[in-house]
Image (cartoon, rainbow, N blue to C red; front, side):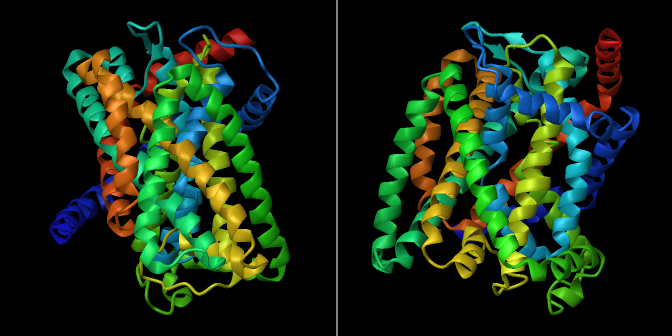
Length: 462
């Protein structure tokens, strides 16, 4: 059965992430960058200053909303996850070191794409029957475009409901159990025969924790993510920087392999990766899986923010992509490439490759800290995507379906703890592509509206 699913998914994935998808994702990002005058460059310092400043803003949001910083932490919770750890490892293994370069390119354009998504989401959001702000691609399609485009909003929400189970939950749980298993095995505390039983127990525990947070509503989600996200990011960055510093002599050759390998991967992968397009495809697709620019999902969290300034909240989108891909994904790639661990190019890889980069540098003891960091990453992503899925199903079927959905979503953690990594990642990639299509069409059609919102905001500032 799994073989049949893999075959069908492979065919669909190759189409979704083929040349047309690459053109659409990069094309829309480039188009938005040009028409906004490369806002991600012009307003970069503003985005960094405002975001860092919000860390120290302890003001409370009104009922049914998050503070702007809680909103960005929830969005970062959705983006900073296994895409930064297992996703980068997979991109490097299959696409070679050059995949990192294409990840950077997609992130540069993605900063503007996400700015547009967040700005439009806050501008076109609604208030639901519980008094909560609701928004995202389905709402800016519904309220920003004519009725003839309404089918795009419906398709986006349906794809969103399907995507969260794989991208937001199953792959994240897989990374949690992999990291914990690795830590226990390094200390001889886990035998191969016991792995399935331990993973099942972990899946049950994670499911219970996810349900406790998500069923507590928007306020609880915001309270959890604003504490978890800064902690996990700082811990991971410190560990990763340590690997780079210890292996500093390898840094020049690693960057050379990234830039040269982007256009000629054959020489850096022993001839296994012979196509530049494979490197580009893996870099862009895994970059989007990580930072979600083009998917529109992060804007769903931002729409919950207690703010009346769409553009100011949009600046957080620039910060998110920068932190997620330019900082954290790059550090993950450097951990793998600088540490000198063996990479089986052309074969699927995940969190275990990143973990080996840490352990080969620090020793087996660090597996405990990497396990904690990765568990935080993955758990925060599960929480963020739970919110996304609940908003999507609410849009299609109404508010009464949200709690049953969240219960089912929580139980998926048990399933995710026992499935194979490769198929999970492939299915997640496919559904991400399905979500991107209606969102990118909407962003292109609403570019004029975006410019009008920006013009008013910046003229008011003057």
